[in-house]
Length: 135
Image 1 (cartoon, helix red, strand yellow):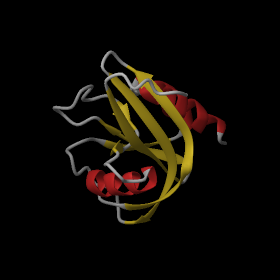
Image 2 (tube, rainbow, N blue to C red):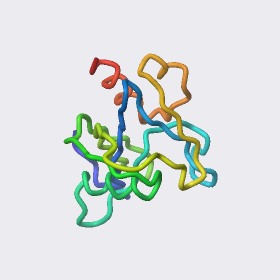
Image 3 (tube, rainbow, N blue to C red):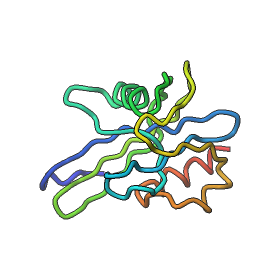
Image 4 (cartoon, helix red, strand yellow):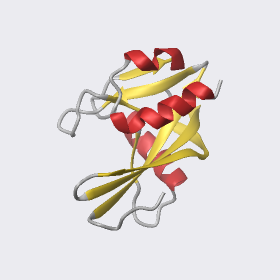
């Protein structure tokens, strides 16, 4: 998809961390937009940083673990009034550590057949569908 260069472009690397048939999800921390909604962990890419390095750094900062990051399986672009949000979803596996909520978010392991009962951010919808199809 083409990203319209109108306004600000925010690029986000997202980790779909899987283990034993389940994925790690988290709530948006208090004080951030859409706080309380569920999402896959990740964050904004810094200037000059690859998406994969972004995912590794964000996961270390947000949940205190090291992950291996596979090439992205999906990129989505969401155009808002003054912002284009580019999301890259990567499947990841834990290399070391145990997930801890470093930003006072709630963490939860869920199986793909539980996805429909969770209040995910709408920007995660295409990734959720793809993850269900991976089986």
